[in-house]
Image 1 (spheres, rainbow, N blue to C red):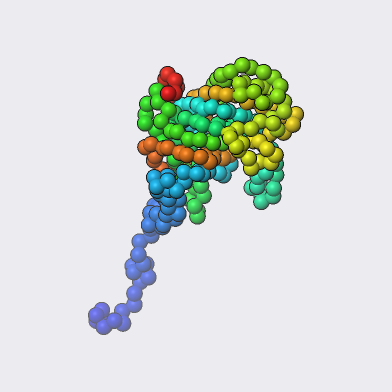
Image 2 (tube, one colour):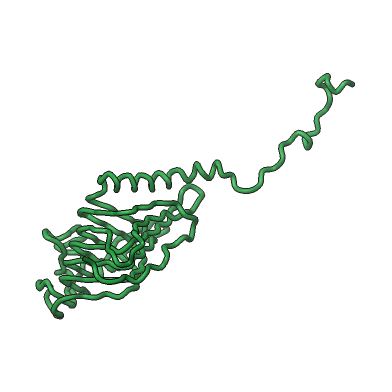
Length: 252
C-alpha cells in the first residue's frame, strides 16, 4: 500500500505532541493581570490626585516599614475591631490604633499579600527618596491600625496621667476620650479613635516613631497626601519590605 494514499494506519504515539513542562507563563500572566491592574490603578490615582482624600490598605496581613513617622496632634489607643475569620465567621480582636493630625513619613514600604486565582503574590507599594535625613512624604489625618510594631516612640510635652484634654503628653486609662484632629477624626464609635473607657491610651502634642516595622491591619490617610517616587510592583509570595534605615537628623 502506498503511504501517500491516506490509508496507512497512524501510530498515536508518533503523532501526539511532546508533553509540556515548566510554567505556562501565558496563563500565569493572564492570572496576574488583575493584580497588576490594581497596582497600576492605585499609582495612577495617586498621580492624578483622585486618592488624595482617602488611601486604604486592608486585608489584615500587610507589613509596613519606614525610617520614621513624625507628626503633631498624636493619639494612640487600644481598640476593638470586627473582622472576618478564615472560616467566614465574624470575630473581635484588639488593634493598636495610631493617628496623627499632621504627619511626615521618612520613606515608606507596604507589602500586602494577595491571592489572584491560583497564585499567591505580594503587592509592594514603596515611596522613598533614599535619604534617611528627609521626611519626604507629607500627609494629614493619618490613621494606622497595627497588631504588632517595633520602634522607638518619642513624645514631646508635659507628661500627665489623667484626662486627655491637654495638648501635651498624657498617658492614662480612659482612651475613649482621646481625639485627634479638628474636627476630631471619627468612625470607630463614640467621639474619638475608638478607645474604651478603662483602656490604656496616649495623647501627645508631638510624636516621633521609628525606625518602624509593623504588621498592619489598615493604613488610612484621610487628608492631603504628597508621595514622591511612588513605586508599585507585584512580587512573589513571601516577599517583605526591607528593614528601614535609622533616620538622620530631625524633620523640617
